Amino acid sequence: MAVKVLVVDDSGFFRRRVSEILSADSNIQVVGTATNGKEAIDQALALKPDVITMDYEMPMMDGITAVRHIMQRCPTPVLMFSSLTHEGARVTLDALDAGAVDFLPKNFEDISRNPEKVKQLLCEKILSIARSNRRVSAYSAPAPVAAPAPAPAPSSLGSYGGSAPVRPAPIPARIHAAAPSSPAPKRKAYKLVAIGTSTGGPVALQRVLTQLPANFPAPIVLIQHMPAAFTKAFAERLDKLCRISVKEAEDGDILRPGLALLAPGGKQMMIDGRGAVKILPGDERLNYKPCVDITFGSAAKTYGDKVLAVVLTGMGADGREGARLLKQGGSSIWAQDEASCVIYGMPMAIVKAELADAVYSLDDIGKHLVEACI
Image (tube, rainbow, N blue to C red; front, top):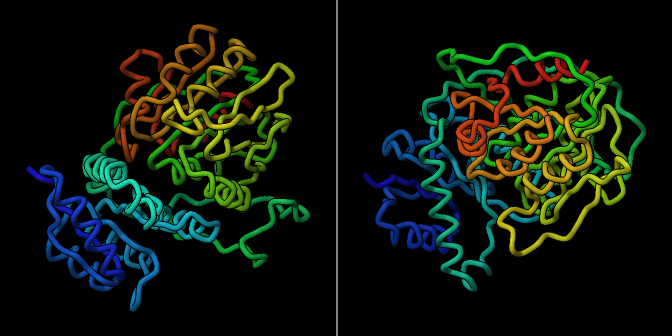
């Protein structure tokens, strides 16, 4: 049965072009369009699509507000279109917090210049998120997040336009039947915690990292599949919400306890023997920039059995081969369980390869990191 899609955008050109691209795939059926957020809610209730594509900036009601209403009234996977700017990144992260599953850059030039590539990417995203867990989710307020420590003096990262931090919308929390989980971990003197993720990762990382205390004793590296324009804004957001420090990694940054370094989009992050990160240009031969396998593999070479690696929600199998190297060196591997994943791809690859030492639900991973490392 074809995946039913509702296309929402105030641009007539963009609505038509997206509809044409999707309709050319026999596995996808465009069942309707909407020109603003209010129409999107009405159409979602009436047509019950499997996936909604959503613009942000629209008259009458913006995309983020529409996503919040849709998630409350008829939870449906939403793919956001966003601009590749710092402001576009901030807005997209707000949309993910509101319940959107994934996003794609809204680039009219790419649609004109590389129609086949755009078609393939868009259709793959639609078909993948149609199979996501988001539809069956119930939404509620997130688990309480402890207030972060007093803000440090302004750093070179700055803030969103210099204004006071705005607390993001509530994070969607799944309510599902309890699944078997691994026992609590044993404590070990880890020299590094490495976390890899993709689709659903921004919200997942926020849920995990906000549970860590400021005195978390292990350095952390984060690898999130994300465009170059987005990772700085994402690191800023996490730094505001967490008690640990979070920053976009720069070449030569030193790993230290209580600091999480986020791999910059479009590049690769490796760990060297001095306990520093190396940021390398993104290799065009690699599908992912940053790539979880690259960072995991370098951590295995540097730290042997002293790494705790965690693979969270995401499409594909990135992280599996890096986890295999870590496992061969004696390090520990955790995977997020299927029930709490938006997309059970990357964690499933770890589990199927029999590399997982433990499988935990998303809301348990943060507290287990504390138990394992402190």
